[in-house]
Each structure stands twice: as structure tokens, then as C-alpha cells.
Amino acid sequence: DIQMTQSPSSLSASVGDRVTITCRASQGIRNDLGWYQQKPGKAPKRLIYAASSLQSGVPSRFSGSGSGTEFTLTISSLQPEDFATYYCLQHNTYPHTFGQGTKLEIK
Amino acid sequence: QVRLQESGPGLVKPSETLSLTCTVSGASFSSFYWTWIRQPAGKGLEWIGRIYTSGTTNYNPSLKSRVTMSVDTSKNQFSLKLSSVTAADTAVYYCARGEAIDFWGQGTLVTVSS
Image (cartoon, rainbow over all chains, first blue to last red; front, side, top):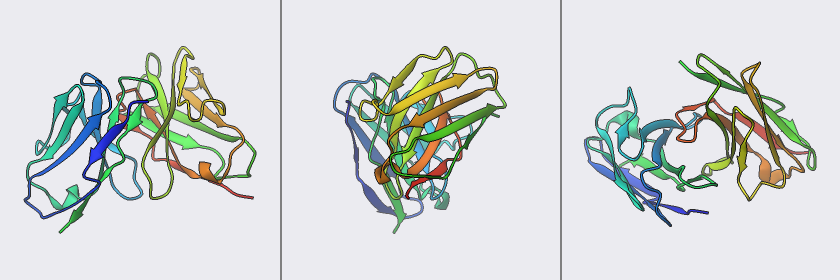
């Protein structure tokens, strides 16, 4: 299985901060990666697909980059509604695998 | 807008089979992959497997011996069966569209308990 190592596992930040979350794949996955936001009691919502393409309707403060084994999700200026848990998902190789999640909390 | 809705028993006894169905509306059902994911309370997401509308499947090896997925294109539905369940299978189960998952169902909690 491809391991997706997501870091940090938790993060405290303030409104207006710039935040970066990283996913590292145990082997190359081209750009077959998505980023998801999950709020308590809700299904995940896709933010980014193909590593760097912004999902329609998602604010432009979210951006993704990377290819191969290292990927980042950046939130340029945190808003109150951004405090949630974030996951990456690789869909290059079966079984598809998620990162373990990053819980973004208010400082 | 694509809508996915999971349905099935919320309580399953140990050693029995968990059965869930996902009904898709609002968009084409054909020519897509359809995926099942689960999430134990307070934990991360686990990919269970996916089925194409032709019936081709891929399962997570960690569950492969117990998982069966099927599809009914006439009803825009796909299904999950997980046999010989234990308490470790208690989770919220999500159905979703695609391999680069774009749409998710709201999720359904399945508890394994006698």
C-alpha cells in the first residue's frame, strides 16, 4: 500500500494566518491527489483535485501544489469557517489511501 | 447537483453481514466509479473499495476477504456487503463518486453490537 504521511497532525492558528499542510507519499503518485475538508458530523468536501486544481465553488485562498511524492495544501488567510480537519487522498494505486488528517484549531 | 444517499440497517450483530445501498440522483450514473469509505468515531478515513458501472471492482486488501460490492444501473444504485463483522467495523460509512472523489453521501452510522 502507498502510505500517505500527513503533517502536522494538528495545528493551532489564528484568523488571517497563512497555513500549510503537507502530504508525503511513500512512492510516486504523479498528481493523483486530492485535498478534503471535513467538519464535525459532516461528510468530507473536496477542495483540490489533481494536486493543484481548485474545486469549483471553493474560495481562492485554498491552493494546492506538488507532484510525485510531496504535496502541500495552503490556506493563504484563515477564515473562521476554515477550522476543520483536512485529509489528502491518493488515487494513483490500489488501495487508495488517505492521510491521517490534520486538525486545524483556533489559537 | 449530484446527490448520494446511503441506506441500510444502523445496527448489525457480530458475525453477521453489514449491507448498505447507495442511491444516486441528479446526474448520470453510467461511466463512473463508485466508492465506499468508512470512518470510525474520532478516527480517519479508510478506503473500502470501488466498483465501476460495468461491475469491475477493486477492494482494500485489508477487507478483501469480507467485502462484496455490486451495482444496479437500472436503479442508479450500488451496494456494499461486509461479512463476519465485529465491533471494529463500527463506523460511519460513506458512499462517494469517482476515484478522485468529488461527491460524497452524508454518511450512515453502522454499529456492530449484540
